[in-house]
Image (cartoon, rainbow, N blue to C red):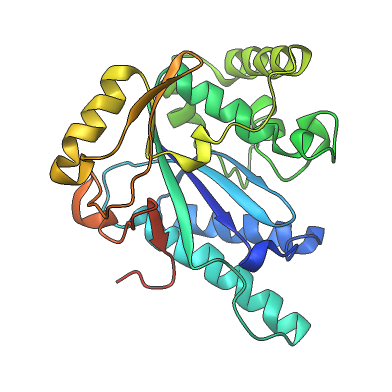
Length: 251
């Protein structure tokens, strides 16, 4: 699983209008149809986006999808506003998430984004995140890969998953467990000690200098100043020293 974050150029609020957030999600749906992108959750804010996606083993699906969605969203905005210049930061960041408790923790973290920003009191009030779609799956135009999400979290039905997930979110809100935690969007990997250590070992020489640290019951592999190759091979060969992709330069 990959938690992807992508920010607007210079953190400008270029997604402040609902129509632009809707267009981003429209193109995300197109990426799902065109490339088979497996989306587990999402959140589109006023100046950045969060995507939780699953690598299904098909080469270049994720980078091609980001190229399509980011490119078309930026083009449409610039044309409508008669604007020139970059719409997005050149790179987006990808953090590997282990498919266990860390997966549902990351889901909750993404959906509580606008709660942390003080825009809403509950994620159900923000239409541009995955919360409502998880609790009330769509019959048409679904963005989330329901079968994939249900299988990864070991639920027999989306009804069971939805009711449980609503409880996870409520528990996080009641316990004030919804503050920003950089491990989800700034690390190379988040999970158990074994998962993070295996990720580091898979980097080989490029893993030297990266530190595996414990963080509130989890482990994370921190960034280093050295460049490295992604553990998934050629499909993500454009990862930089900050675990980021150049979204405009995908072959």
